[in-house]
Each structure stands twice: as C-alpha cells, then as structure tokens.
Image (tube, rainbow, N blue to C red):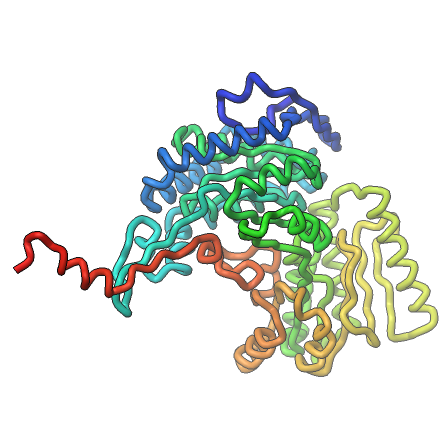
Length: 483
C-alpha cells in the first residue's frame, strides 16, 4: 500500500519532490510518500499559512472552530468512516502495536474532542471564553483580549498514535495557523485527521500544514522556527534541548520533555476479594502502548500490611501481565530495545540470587513482560516495553521519599486507595511535584482538559492585550457628541 502522508497548500505541491517512509509489520507493508522539503519551500508554506490566518482564521469565532473539530471527531467515531478504517489498518503496521488496542484507544481518546469536551477545555483556561473573539470587560475595569499566535509550529511525537491531535486541537482553539512536523515513527494520523478537517472546512484546513523532515535538520528547523510566534515540541530531554538552541529569542517555546509516572496501592486494596482486580488494573497501566508514553508507570509502590503482601501482589501482577499479553501482544522490539530489556532482566535475576528481597517474574519464552519485586530499592527506571517494578512501602510518605530526586520529571500517579486516605494522599502527591493523579487503570488515558506537565493547555499559547479603564474614561472627553 502506498499513501500520501502530508498536507500542504495546493499551489506548492507541483514544486515538491518526494521520498518514501517504509513500514513493514505482521499484516503487511506500507509506503508513506512525504515531501522532501527545501528551506525555500518550507518558507513559502509558512507564508501561505500566515496569509490564511490573516485572511480567514483570525476572523473566526472560537465556537466555529469547536464546531469543525466536533464534526471531524463525529466522523472518526464512525467505524465505517474511510479515514478511520485507513488508520486502523495502517497504524498497527506503522507502530507495531496491537490492532485491537489501537481501535479501543482511538475511540476512547477521540471522545475527548467532542463539542462539550472542547468547550470545557476552553472554559478551563478562560473565565470568559469570548476573550478569544473580542475585547471583553475586566472585573477590575477596562477590557482584555487573548490572541493566539499567527503561526505555531508543533513538533509531534510518535510514541503513541493519536496524541498529536491534542496539540493540533489546542492550536486551533486559540485560532492559530499550524505547521505540524510529524514523527518518523508515526507520521500518518495527523495527516488523516487534517484531511477530515479539509472535508468540513477547506478554508480552515488551508491554515494547516502537516509535513515531515528528519529531526535535527538545521536549515528546515531554523526556517520553521524563525517564521513562527510559538514552537511546541514533544520529545526526549535531549531533543527538546536541541530544538531550544535553534529557536530565536523572540519566539516562545513550550517543551514537553521526558517525564516519569508511577502507581501507589494502599493495603486496603489488597483484600483477598480486591487484590486480583487491583492487579488487573495495574497490568493495564503497565502494558498499554508498551509503556511508551510518559503517563505509563515505571514502578508500583505497594503498602505493606494488607491481606495480600506486596510480594504476592507482584505475582498476581505477573499473571495479569501475561493475560494482557495474550489478549494484546506487545509490539516487536528494535535491537536496542531488546538488548536493554535483556540487560535489565539479567541484572534483576543476578540480584535475586544474592538478595532474597528481589524476585524476577518474567515471561519464559520471550521478553514480552517482566515484573521485578524489589524490597530494597528506590524509584527504579524501567527500560519500558512492559517492564515494571513493585516496591513495598510502609506508607505513602516512604514512597514519596523514594521519588524526591525526580520531582522535576514527575508526571502521573495512578492511585488505588480507600476514602479515608484519599484526601491525605492527593495532598502529599500534589506537593511532591506530580501534576496528574488518576485512578489505577486509567493512567495512559488522560481526560480532556488535564494540565499537561502542570501547565495551562490554552492559556500558555496566547498573548494578552489589556485596555486600561483610563482609556475608556478619557475617550468621552473627545466625543464630538459630548454634553
């Protein structure tokens, strides 16, 4: 199968030369045709995007944008929609992830972008969402308005299919023209979704370009960044640092670098009747998309003193990890990923021979899942790909001491606890640097409107213009119809 994997203004397409990105999986082979851009072509694309912003996008009401996104999402929630079917056929080949996992995730994730959810996202950051459309009165007097950037460049990640929609939608909700750079590991979904927007509103789609270039291409990145008001980048700490070096000082930069997450399980959740359910939820969090997202847990801290001990819980978790693998197999690994897993397993197995407080529970015939029980460990970073540690703790305070050094990198915590501990736990976790707390079993799937990396989703993208009350008061002095 050969697919065009780009969205650029019509008038520039005849100038482009192309190359192919090839993916091969269990169910077939796909070639994605992408433009091999020059700096001059990319500069022309940014010029067209900014002109369309001036001619059309900035005159839209934010509700107009919400209506377009809602219509696009409704099409994608229809299993028979052509572009949805293309995604479900191609994304398992491109990513290696299980097809059923992708199908379920897309449905659950896309529901976050229905009209009512989008309105909540806007309301979350703007007391009066009309400030995105016009100057509105301030409580303290005067007027205020929020302006989205004329052009925002988005550097998408490809570790979890569909996630670029969040960044794309955020830019559109503040009425910004959008240049999206797709990842080599998953370049297709953003293109397919923008093609849906084009079906609904071609003028809005003309203010969006989705292209590929090899990460770190200095000339292209300097061109893109130099013509943008804002750059949003998702990636590793190294890649976001490299991007930051190429961004001019007058361009705002919002990086979303590497983060780590973990789970905490109270002893009350280890009653005999609850322990298996708790283990199933934990296995889901540790297996979904092979831990590739920042929201996936590296460690589960488990309180001692329950009817089921933390060590026995780790064995239940291993059983549930095996069951999840049987239902939704892990993606094939690169040589580097396989070596990292083998090395981490070998170290744990060697330690278990020397220390009775360590136990390695792992799939026998391959490396599809691994659970390491560690009695004497602090936070243990995972090599990912369904490799997780269980660490016993006396109470949550002990667990927090083990993550103190990672405060700047903490993302999500999945909790399983009774009502009497809930308030205390969320206060302790919020204080230690965590920016999202959810139920165990829900870690990889955040709800709409969550504050990614603890930041405002839309509020960080805009600039504000204040009209002081003195200007309003003084204008009456110059009114030709004054008394």
